[in-house]
Image (cartoon, rainbow, N blue to C red; front, top):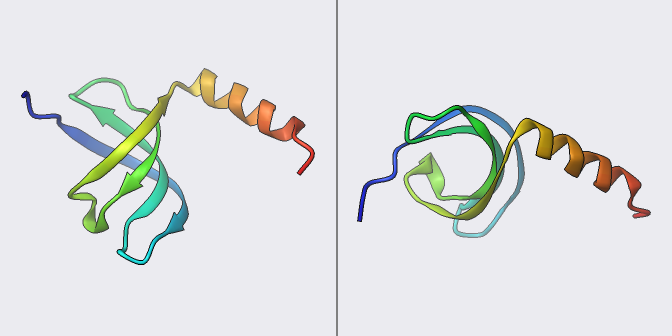
Length: 73
């Protein structure tokens, strides 16, 4: 299996942290040298491991924001 390279360009925010120290974060991440995209996933302390996540373009993030703003919560 090929190694996945990533670089966290910016930490936008941390949503939560569990008892083992993993945190759910929204970051701007470059995957395999490509243009950075918004990325929501769980990260181990020091970002040495990661869980499955969701990667969004700027346009998709704006649409998600608009959808969330319409929720009555």
